[in-house]
Amino acid sequence: MKFFNRPRQEIRTKFEVDLLYKAQSMKSAKPPHPWATEVIIPAAGCIACGWNIDEDLVLISGSGYSLTQARTGLLIHRDRDSNLTYERMSNNDLTFQLPLNNEYISIFGFESGDSYNKRWLDR
Image: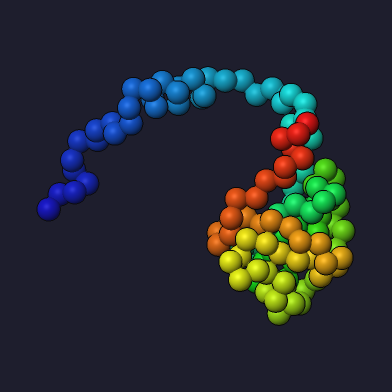
């Protein structure tokens, strides 16, 4: 069988191809507010995440959880107690109780729901 000798045939639609060409022709520019700030937050091994009341990012992994200030990337708290972390996740994996202050937060991720902050919609 000659699988690799078959002629290449475009499988994308005309719309998809046109959109690709349009995207490739765009020039880099400074993003508009509030997207101008870029923060890199390491999240290797993250299985779920969410936002606390202060809009800090909560990352949950197999080795614990962390709390990071989203606007700056500053690590606020890191707890490497994986047993405590799993104990604080709800049975349906949709909420997490922060051991730091017992706040309940909605979480999302590979095995969790789709969290959003209702206050974002109120702005």
